[in-house]
Amino acid sequence: MFNTVSIAQAFIALLGVSFSGLWRVTWTRARPLPYPPISSFFIGAMVCFFDTLGIGNYATTTAALRARKMVADDLIPGTLNVGLALPAIIEALIYLVLIKVDLTLLVACVAASTVGAWFGAGIVSRLNIRTIRLSMGGALILFSVLFAARGLGLFPQGGSALALEGAKFAIALVAFAVLGGLMAVGIGLYAPAMVVLCLLGLDLKAVFPIMMTAAAFIGSATGARFLRSAKVSMPVALGLALAGIPAVLFAAFVVREISLDILRWIVVAVVLYAGTSLLRAGLASPGWSIRKPAGVAG
Image (tube, rainbow, N blue to C red; front, side, top):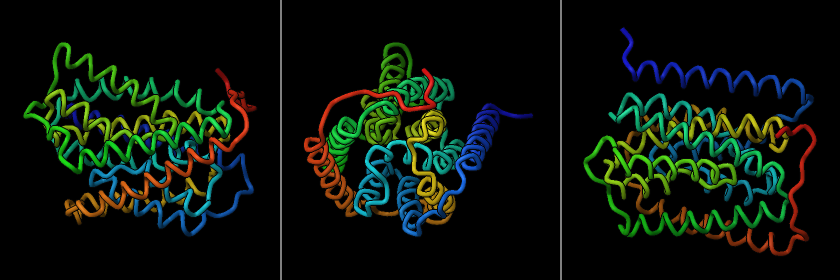
């Protein structure tokens, strides 16, 4: 007899199959496309490996893509959401088994974040390059500040609760709806999700399956919308996904846990630099506007 975790996993697996099918159809229609660049495989493997261990991969991937000048700035949000969706789905499937969490809270947070992300992706797909650069630059700097504060022990390490009720439950839903919308801009979910849920008294370990499942659904929802808008680098996204999936499996089942103290400060420095460079590029770009690209509905 299936338990609720098995049902949740089956639903997530179905999500992965559906998203893969949509991606395949989009890729076929867009041919001929170049093969993924070799560096996209290295980036995908690196960021997804550390993402599985709790570092987060949106900010680090953005920094790497900009350092290598692989993707135009206005294509970065779509490339992130499409390329990192399938590795996030694998993470969610794994952590639902490894860590116990209240499924009511998990489902509610995932639903709220997915709705927020769907509308967020619709907005981002219409933004001009200046607005995208400024938004992502500000997001990266915010991430670096949150990550530095976490490294300094300024955030609570969580309580002992595995579920939230009443006002705390409602606060979590509102927070995840906002975080889902921000994720479409390229703001990673992990750091702010940890802050919110730990402040509400949730056990830190219980945060992992919630934020990873939310990332899986958000990536798929926003990825689908970005695929429709064509605001994504398909070859780079494919390289991220193909290398990211085995990296997730290696981190979860072979490495499991390593000391990340030094790496966290390297990430802070790299992401802060990337955020600053994006802000400078955004301020140097002309115009503020919202445009509607061909093929985007809604």
